[in-house]
Length: 150
Image 1 (cartoon, rainbow, N blue to C red):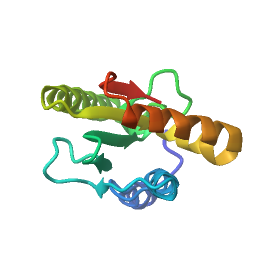
Image 2: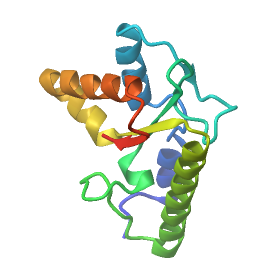
Image 3: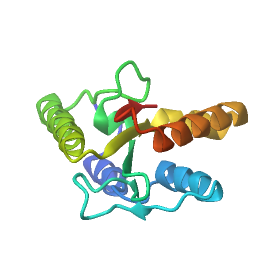
C-alpha cells in the first residue's frame, strides 16, 4: 500500500522533469568545462538526445534508472501499486529506447547512454568522475564504436 495520499503522489510525480534534469545539467557542465560544445535536446535528431555533438556525430542520452529500467540497479525499483500500468509504461519506454538506438545506428550517429546512477557516483567520487569523463571523451572521439552504456 502506498504511504502517500493520491494528492501527494500526484504532486510528487508531476514534479518529475523530462528535460534539464539534475543529472543532465551536471554532465553538461562537466563536458562544457572540457571544451565540448553541443546541442541540447536536438529536435532534428531521432529521440531528441539530451546532448548532440554535431562535430563528432554523437548523441548522448542521460537515462533515469527507474524510468528506463537499468538492469541490476538499486534505483530501478518497481512500484507495488498499479503494477499493470507501470509494467506497460516501462515496456513502452524500453521499446522506444530500442527504436531510437536502431534509428541512430541506421543514420550512423553514435549513441552513448549514461545512467543516472553513474552520474550520482560521479558526484560522490572525484576519481570515478575523472575516469568516466575520460571514457566519454574516448567514445566521442573514437569512430569505431557506435554504441556504449556507462
